[in-house]
Image (cartoon, rainbow, N blue to C red):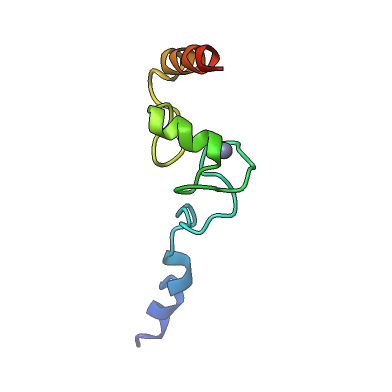
Length: 80
Ligand SMILES: [Zn+2]
């Protein structure tokens, strides 16, 4: 009488979450970036962003991204 139960049981394959970020990604972790990853999953520019605290480890923008970005660009321009 257990035959009906197996019908509703989800297949094991469907249990795997589809939004897991692979560590061996073929592109930069930063959102919308299509460059090849250089360091820690980021391209060289976004790795700098990550170091500066502009983006998180997951590639999302920091809450005060605009402020930090301006400060970063100011520093960059002064160094150039
Ligand atoms: Zn990038």
